[in-house]
Image (cartoon, rainbow, N blue to C red; front, side):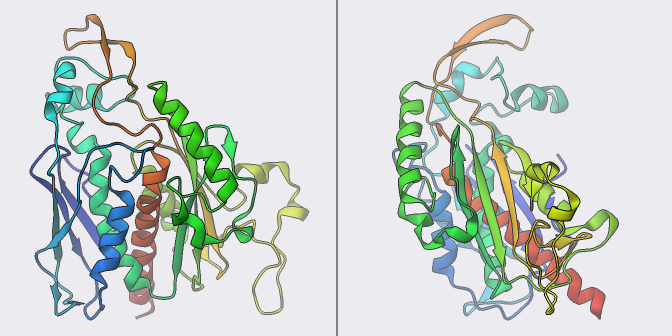
Length: 354
């Protein structure tokens, strides 16, 4: 299986399965001398871990990261950083009913067709549990980036949408509720809606908005290595993601060019930021902001029709512990992938200048 590595200079390779002994990764290319706050890394993992509230999967995993290399006396050594997170609360029998059949809209069928077999216990490598390794690496990338700040939050659940721009929000409120929406009233409505969906045995999708601030000018390369293209790839690699837009995105098509153009101030900043902080694939120093659409979780706790390995039509039912809405736990994953991209392009920029 290829495709387990992300990045060019700041490079992460992940390993492990949802119901295996452990998941983990090797982060290569992190510069030496970065003083790490290990508690902050664990805190990001805690934001992603299951069982943290009534609106997420009730799988109980401590998700404690163990580092094996690349860190000495609290600082990075410049050598590969190896780490693992042990799985402690697997219930593989919850998946025995799908051993010989395929869950609609899961990777089950295509894995079986491509590789000739599959790990049906939680989906193996296709499980979103793999993203815990990304959060570890992304938390390290955040500390490497210093003053550059990355904040993601839930801006929509189903039809419930946060009708405010990010400039109007207080990011300190993101962690004040289990939905991770920085608007108290909207968050309460979203939480009740997710609980209702869960009670029905169904799932719902949503949108996460991410904002990157204090971005220097000049990150990104023309043509095929545009920064927004890499951010799009990073976000679309996350489980359940169905859409990515940055800056004015799809709403920008409704505007005339005269209104959409970001007029310059004398210091090089712009009066508006429809470009989303990126022009020609290169950062212009303004805030980068983008939206990521997540589909409803495919596993519904209801009876459904499907096919088995022989192509016979069968009826089965979703079982086990699953998120009724993935977006609250996906917030730190989005931040992590954004941080990995920004760290990689920061190093690429340094190399090119040399």
